[in-house]
Length: 451
Image (cartoon, rainbow, N blue to C red):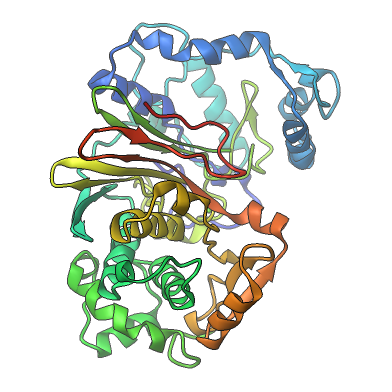
């Protein structure tokens, strides 16, 4: 649900970068449909931390410092910064806010919308409107979670399920996988040892990332080749099959057009039930609005999506690229993924290709160098974009071979690359035994386990 007018603008009115909160309503909707535990037990760990506080780690202390300039613009923001007695809490100081309201602390059915009690809802609306936003009490009261049917397609002899509308996965992840199948990447070596596979996989990711909204010149080029670029056309396997052989032309100079804090979860229980979810504020921690309501900084989840918002009317759902997937062999699930971080599309495509298409071990694919979307080049023509590679990820001979294939590379420091990477929570299931495995992502995942 959007709280924007018809012509949102970038900058200035920070209240226009906020969205109607719906996480708690979604949580209740999922529990009502699938839950087995008493509803209030879901929040006991969170309530314990709300009452007892948390130890400020080194990373968390840095987050306070990072957002200080934004949060210090209001009394509420200063209160948030001062919660550990200093303006920026130091490591090992306990942060506690006993006077702040605690919504959803009861097992009674929650009201519709976002599980915000009336005083909190009024405070939210007032704060957002003060910041130039268009939120109303009706926006919160009228909010309802959506239950959408997934998109389903056949890839590498398996059935892949991805998010339904308004998610964009069918145009990006499914199309990308179909293009990989059309180019027979499943019959090649892994991308971290096969330069041509690396080139084609990155080109696929760059090509599908803006879908379904290709720029005019890209759309015109596809039309000239007799390819249907309407959304209905892009949902068909024929679109990927026809576009895949044209990738070289898109990435040849002159052929193309002119010159996205969070948690991913994959759970498999002993009965074989699978839950796949990504929860994110879609913003840098605490955002940059400086708006704090009830001790909670409001994220600027719409801050980088102003152009997209301008294409939708108030009340529309905001499309997103976060693709959670479930791949099945016949009727037996074999792989589940939930992405996180900046490089959502290439990471999802390379994992499904590696495990399902190339029959590689999940742990090996997870441990391989991550593929990164070069967001800084997103506005450039495909032929002008550079592939971002960490300085320590590949050998010099391999990179020379990639360059010889016409790929423009941008080597970045390993630390910078780690900050820009995407990754996935994932689990593979043996279709014969039902045994689940879930390897940790080196340097990223804190916990992983499967029974």
